[in-house]
Length: 328
Image (cartoon, helix red, strand yellow):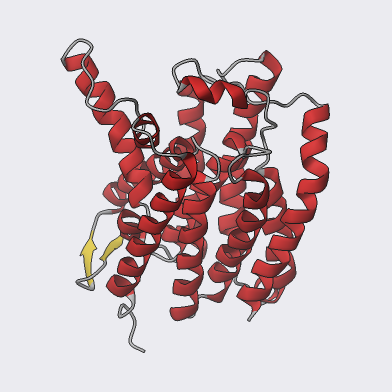
C-alpha cells in the first residue's frame, strides 16, 4: 500500500511542479540545443525548456521521505541510498545541462571528466552497499537460480562497468519526446512489483515513487514535448535503474528489462565501428536506433509506444526468470 501511495503522491507533486517549473525554465532561457547531426525536423524543438527532470527528482525525493520514513527509522536506508546515488548522477547531468545552457551549444562538460565522475560515483555506491547492505560478490543468474562466485576485484570491475554503461545507455535513449520516460516508467513498475514480491519494501517505495513522478512528467514530455528531462533527468534515471538492480542484488536482470537501452547503445556502437572500418559506410540510416526508425517513416509516438511495449514484455519475462529466487 505504501508503494502505491508513494506513486500517487509523486505523480501529483510532479504534475504540480510542472506548472511552475516550465515557465521558470523559459524565463531563465534554459532551452535545449539540438545537434546538427540529428534529423533536420528536430530543429523545430530548439529552445524547448530542458532540465525538466527536476520534476520527477523532487517528486521522488518527497515521496521517499514521507513514505519511507518508517523504514529509515528502523534502520533500513535502502530507498534513500538508491535515491542519493541517483541524485549524484543527476548532479553530473545538471552540470552538463548548465554548461550547455550557459554556452548556448550542445557541448557540456568534457567526456573524460564525466566518465571520471561516473566511475567515482559507481565505486562509492558499491562500497556503501557492501558496508550497509551486505552486497555479495556472488552473481545471481536469473532463470536458472544459480550463483556465480566472483573475487571482489572482478565483481567490482564488472559492477562499475555495468553501472556506467547503464547510466549512459539511458541517457542515449533520451532522444525522442517521451521515450526515455516511458521506457523507464515500465522498468520502475517492474522493480516496484519485484520489491513487493521479494519483500523488499523500501526499494519498492523508491521505484513506485519514481514511477509516479515519471508519469506526472510525461504529461508535459509526451509528444509534442513542452519540456525535456535533459541530462539532469536521464542520468538520474540511469542511476535509479542500475541502483535498484544492485540494491536488490540482481544486476543481470538489467539485460532483459533494459533491452531497449541495450539496443539503442549497440546500434550506436555498431554504426560508429562500421563507419570507421569501411571509411564512411553505414548500417543504419542514423544512430541510435530510434533515429533509424524515424528516417524510415515511423512517428515519434509509434516508436515510443513500440519501445515501451517491448520493455513491458521483457519485464514480464524477467519477472518469470527471478520470481522463484526465494522460496515463497
